[in-house]
Length: 87
Image 1 (cartoon, rainbow, N blue to C red):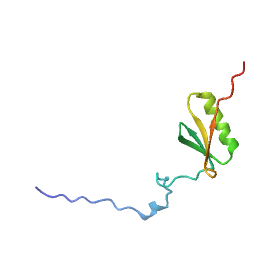
Image 2 (cartoon, helix red, strand yellow):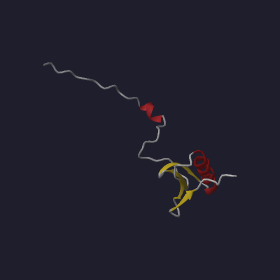
Image 3 (tube, rainbow, N blue to C red):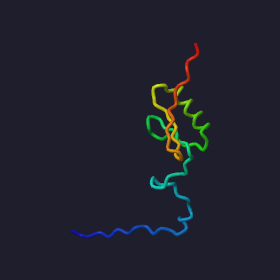
Image 4 (tube, rainbow, N blue to C red):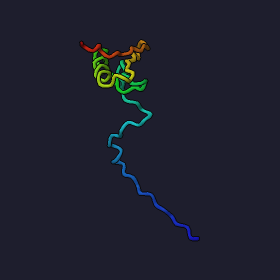
């Protein structure tokens, strides 16, 4: 059987100037407060008020799921409850 030689294309050095997308190993910057839905982190916020507002929107739309806010500095979880229905 005859052997075949395959040549790889030569990469240009100018392509290195293009910014690459962050890989899975390098995580993007996170805020202090992490919004978690069913114990899976969905987003992060720098203030507790912003995280609480986003959590309430999710909890009112989907009352069955567990929504919590994790404080990555104090290492505490705060469970978000749905607001009481007005009679």
